[in-house]
Length: 239
Ligand code: 6GU
Image (cartoon, rainbow, N blue to C red; front, side, top):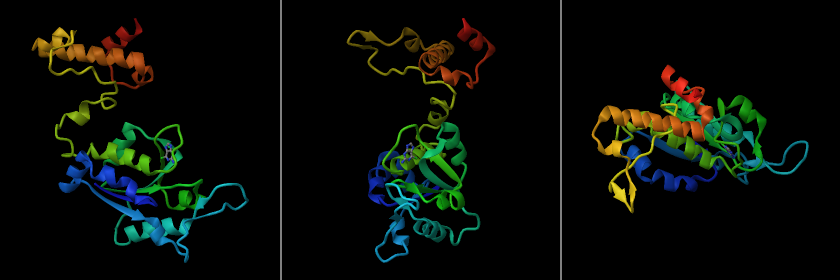
């Protein structure tokens, strides 16, 4: 998996790229990432990347030339152009499903904006998909790009140590995760549920499934509509 990130603030990615999982994935060549400061593709002598909006109003708008030229430079020698994703609060809400779909590509280009926004021609003629990570506004797309990359990287085979961990977690099962415990079995009088100490694997699996269902019902009932449930589980939820 290769990511090309177009940003005016490449230094924001330093901590992320040097953090444990990402660093190991890059060292193992499972993930490759390049940072491009699209100011380097500005066409004017002041290296401007933004300008005032036609029609007036406040704020600045990202100019088309630097972003088009940066993407073109990255894809010059490629047969098929990888998807170009724009990070924007106006985008489609990002989900685990979308992360899974994007993880099937071998390369992605991520555009991070700042200021008031992007010239509409970038959106119309350069971008394949516009992605939002939630209903709140960030000062720029960099944090969103890291969220998107993080969620994709952990789906790349070999990146997570434990092969089961990406399939079993919340959202992949359609439900929230069950409670987890580790040693000690009694911490300050708070005991680990007996069933988990029983060694009875079928009972443990049943308890975990039940806990997942209850937790999802309590915290995220909206997820139950699309979760793959047995008839028995559907009936239990209705009572
Ligand atoms: Cl992708 N970008 C910005 N700037 N703000 C956001 C966002 C993205 N997703 C939610 N808020």
